[in-house]
Image (cartoon, one colour):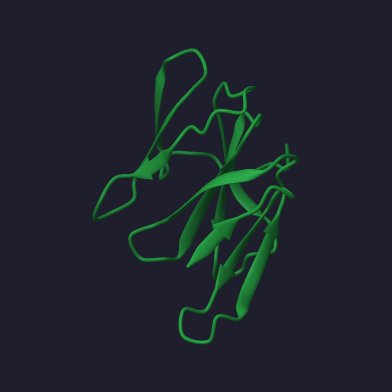
Length: 113
């Protein structure tokens, strides 16, 4: 399972032992949303007052794989979800009332920005 924190990090835990498997730190504000891919290989994180959703590859969780931009400069929670069965599409709302659908297979690899 995974949990976000108001310190700007997300943590993945072993369900049986409860021990931390990895810590993911890249958000500048609290992480309020975490979502696993259908096969539990990828994890997406989103935070409050943060325009960027981050995709992590949990086989090597040392850096962000991809970033997706939305408008989110409030403390509201904007849920994220992925298409069932293949996790190809990442969906989220945004501050201006629009809904974003990102194709996770078409997205470019993260350039660090």
